[in-house]
Image (cartoon, rainbow, N blue to C red; front, side, top):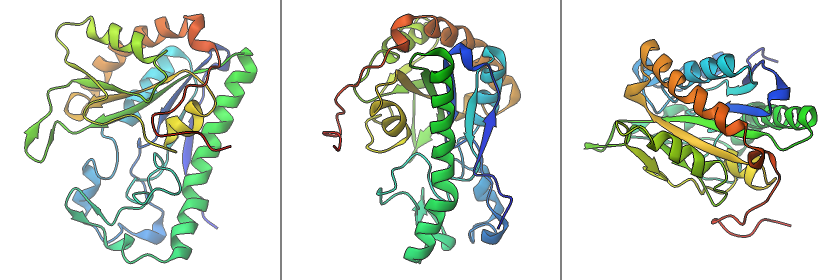
Length: 264
């Protein structure tokens, strides 16, 4: 057995009706994996974790007095924001970096990582969302925090932040509007990624259950240090609080996913 933690709860007032998630907040690995055959420098890159998100989630939860859940392991080990049937769940190559500890990999090891790391994280998310719903008697508002690189394959990305979503626009529309009110910001709408990803965290915990939600990506160079994290926490805290005060964002309503029909 190991005392490695696959997740971390951030305490907060469940009566507030909001939950913050940070799937890729951390870059830890259990000792048995060493560094997966990678140099230490790999763990300062986006391939290992979402830069700045742990700090941003902690600031947001503290300021808003709301609970949160952080992923406790590096996405290089297994990606918590992928479904168990997703072939990219455990990556062999990530942004040009070959991951020796992931290839070759046996079915036994693949399934072990799901059971030991992926499922405990998602159980923690389930439990937190359920506890907030029980405390309020309403659907929680769930906001998932991620970060993206300032450039990809040599091409600069102009967005300061972006909102990713599938088809439930209840939390997305006000979030885009409130962020877009700052004319100094370039805000993406399903850029540079599409938010419709079957069996990812938002699909599994929000789309399937009809819970209002949004996934917010912040550009990593903007939250790469404490000053940047504080600036974005200052910006986002009042926006999230205003959204949370809207009764429409605490109702259950399931929308058809762009990824296809839900399984019976």
